[in-house]
Length: 153
Image (cartoon, rainbow, N blue to C red; front, side):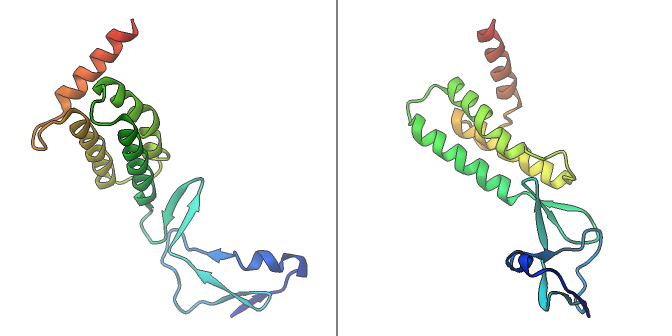
C-alpha cells in the first residue's frame, strides 16, 4: 500500500483521479492511495478523443466514434428526407460524418476495426443509393468520385 500526501487545495481534484496500466494488465491486488483516498483502476482512458483500452496488447475502443458517426448520419438523412439528391447527400455525409468516424483512426487500429469502419462507410452508400445489401459498392464509389470531380471542373 502506497499513500501519497498532497496539499489540501488539490482535494477536489482527487475525486476525479483514476489510474490505468497501459502495456500491462491492471493489478488486482495493488491499491494506491492519494491523501488517504483510494484511486480507482479503470479499464480505458480517453486521450485526445480516443479511448485507449488497458491490457498487454494496445487496443483502441471505436464504439464512441461509431456512435457519433451514426448519430450524424441519421440526423443528416432525416433532414434530407425521402426525396433527396443522392450526390448531395453523399457529399454531406462525406463532409460531416466521415471525419467523426475517422478521427484518430491511424492510431493503433487493428485490421478488424479497419474492416468495421469500411463496412460502415459501404453501408452508408448502400442506404443512400438504395442498393442491394449483397452487391459490392466499389463501382458505386468509383462513379461517385468521377461524378463529383466532373461537377467540380
